[in-house]
Image 1: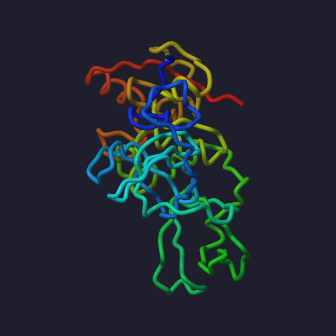
Image 2: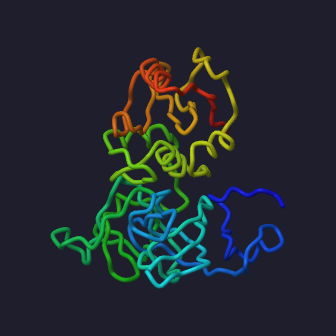
Length: 285
């Protein structure tokens, strides 16, 4: 049988998605049910326990197809946006509500229970979270349940940024977090995915997937003479955004933060750690 990437294939030895029947071996196959992420963000973990590795995060409003739920409060399924598969806390999920109409465009925004910003916030939503808005009044966006958000922190669901590098720049100083996708912490590929998604561009989750899927190869591994703002520089297990011809923008574990640093210094440091640039790719279109 054809080999499938387990990161984006809802299949285990004991259970798989019904649409994979005859394609992957499993003890049984199930249809799955679509739910919605209702927490500001939900960790997607490799195993159904809170101390398991964080592979990525799902943001409020994302749809997920769930194939299995256990008694310990974990649900196993596949994200609709980037197809990633893993375990999420069942408490962060609910049947789909009204279709989202708006998307959070601020790095973080607060949700209030009423029209006063002096009220204790209900939650804080990250950039990229989606939400249904029923109406606007006095510079506040109001949900069908009466929650209030600053209208200026939202954009219509079909409105996108035009410069993904500028989006990524806003995260400078945010802490590094393996698997993270918000200003509270994110990793190298999470930064790229979040910035591109804000611009309406589909982007896979991990750096090797991004290297295989994004843009076109524009330079040999060691050729940095013709770099442009927005080019993506890849190493095995890492990706950085060209900020300008002499600097890179990336989330990295050396600084434990999102930083802009000299291109030559980053390449030398990573080379000293045993890794060479594998490709430079340019987003086209």
